[in-house]
Image 1 (cartoon, helix red, strand yellow):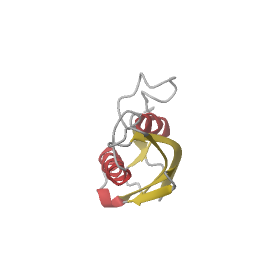
Image 2 (image 1 turned 90 degrees about the vertical axis):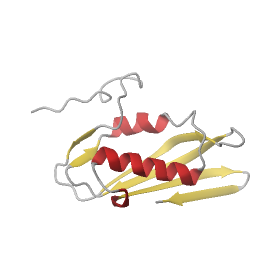
Image 3 (image 1 turned 180 degrees about the vertical axis):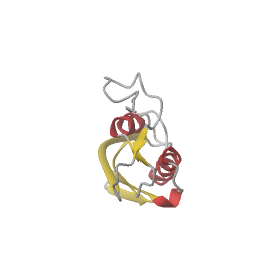
Length: 122
């Protein structure tokens, strides 16, 4: 049976319905990296720019990359500290993949603002 994706193959984020998955074809470890994550500082409302690294050991499901890209773009308007954002992403990816949160590793590297770079990992 052919898998149908809502986000994949469609321009923009209008088709986004959440993190999409597909059956694991037999891989043991998946690492996805994006330097397009932006969130707002909840205190100053200044944008924080991140490089996000998500690693997991799939069981039955793998994460579809276009839905992840759109998912990460949805944080642009959200106020969150780096550390809390790492936990939120980890937890939501784990739910989508039917994994325990401990089976998903998320590392967010906040690009320097005010001379300080932060890396938060789960």
